[in-house]
Length: 422
Image 1 (cartoon, one colour):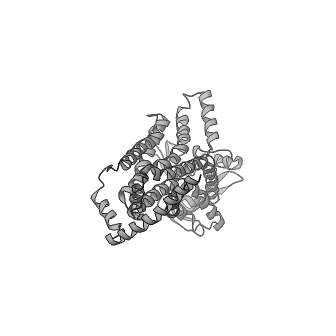
Image 2: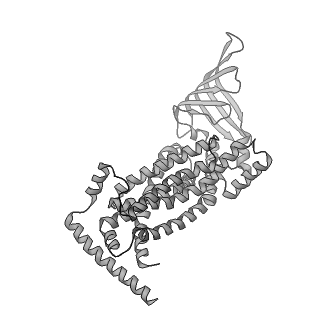
């Protein structure tokens, strides 16, 4: 590897690590607010909470790496262009593609690593996270509950609580809707209630205190009954929840490795492809997704490199803003394609690879324009002002240009001497 290639890669390393850590922090913060808020303060051991947090880091990392690559490409090439190093390199006969090539090769290596990660490591972490979540919910079913919201995980019942004591897990102001009989409407009200899960009997134990049971049979007009009670117990069988935990064999499509997904799809196709058409589509979407998201890493280099050169700004704010725009566009296409494929409107491979194809064509257009020194498209005025505002003053640019010219001339001289010696 030439000195110039190592220099370009070093320029990308720090922005990549910095943006990756920042993205991981933001995703984890959002995850903490959405999910961990339900777990904290529920009396669970700290080690169990930390384990749950670590398992969910896996899917966050899978999303953070492509976005960090896009940000680092924008920042690194933007800084090189802003400090006039790109101009100095061009004047020495080095084209834009030669500057982007080492980063592209590095992104291809990272793509291969992420394919392995998404195909084997990520499913295992998703599986362990699912098992741990079910274990937590069985130990303390009210962990899933939030005050004022409905709990639907208890088979045959919908539970609503106005208030929950985090220390005792007792619910207050409880309303329960019994959905076991469609033609008989049963509503249970209780001043307070306890909800537990018994692993030995594979059932939920719902203890109710001071309330009423209202029943109305819609088959018999005008029939209504009310029963007042001081204490009542309801045993709710839930054997399926224990079977999955005890055997540890059940895995959803996102919890299966690539060989497991392929084996399942082949088995369905050999048995009855028409009957299992929906399952086959869902699993094929997951198979293609294990490749499309990592491949987006290389595509983001095609986009980030030329855009960074055009912007001439190594600002994290500007680079982050542009990265969010392109990543949201990619993610909207990906989620929309997944939904269309699951419903059978388009084949899974078309749905999953179309976002990569569209952004790849855009990246090739940007690269072609940068090589020809053309303007691929006119940036919005507010972005242009951000670029202009983030650049150095004229005198600072002159000093930076002189310094860059000297550094690059030395690097190119050493590279040329190395080639002559070989």
